[in-house]
Length: 146
Image 1 (cartoon, rainbow, N blue to C red):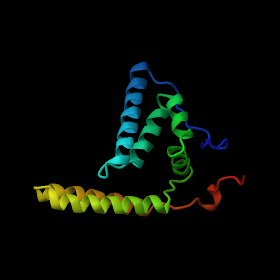
Image 2: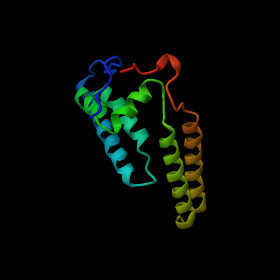
Image 3: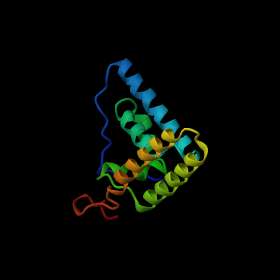
Image 4: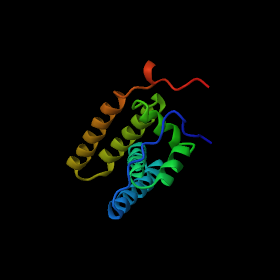
């Protein structure tokens, strides 16, 4: 199982008041649920929801954050993102293929053309942003040699 790096501490925030903590926890759990659903539903992205879940967990639940960071699928992605916004090439290609298939399905099945085009435009913006992310660590952010 993946274990978080010792040299990259989790950025857990100071405790908020109880209401804010519960709201952040609800956001973290909702985002995690949407991210997991996104694994099986092609039109729903997984990575942004997992990143949002980890961010909200830093403000509400060190236990949930530790679970996310220790998870075999989510942990490496969170560490790479925190170390420099790294998104692996395979993830970029997977997102591109899935968004392309979703766009084709929307054009074929959504009766309102402007709704489909609005969604496709949003996906295109996400893809432009995604492909501009680094695919590996820069020299100063390299992970330690093991």
